[in-house]
Length: 162
Image (cartoon, rainbow, N blue to C red; front, side):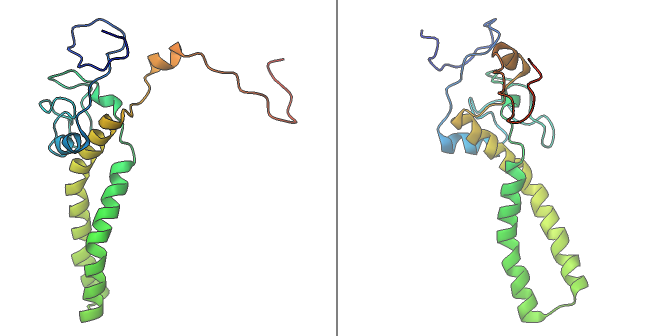
C-alpha cells in the first residue's frame, strides 16, 4: 500500500503519526457530527462534555481533538439565531409596540436558550465538515519535525543574527 493512500487507522500501528482517514461524504459527516457521532466511522462520540472534543474516537481511534472548530460554531449560531429571531422582534415592535422591559423579558431568554441549544450540534457539524476538508491542527511534534525558515530582517532594522 502506498504511503499517501488514505485508510482507516486501526490503532494497532506504532507510527508516530496515524495514517490519514477516509473521510465520509460531506452530508454524512455533517449529519454524524450533528448527532454527536464520529464523522469518520459514525460510531464513537465527538464530545467528551458539552463542547470539549474527545481526544480520539473510541471506535476507529481517529484523532478528533485535532479537528479544531474554534470560532466557527458561535459565528454560525449567532448568524442563524439572529436570522430566526430578529424579524419577529421587529414585527412585534411594529405591530404591538410593547414596552422595552417586555422585549427584554421575552427576547433575551429566547436568544440565550436557542444559542445554547444550537451550539453543540452546530459544532459537531463543523467538526464533520472539517473532517471532509482535511482541516486539522498541527501538533507540537509536527512543528518540531519541520525546520523553521529564518525570517528575513526587516528593512531599516539591524539584523540580530549577524
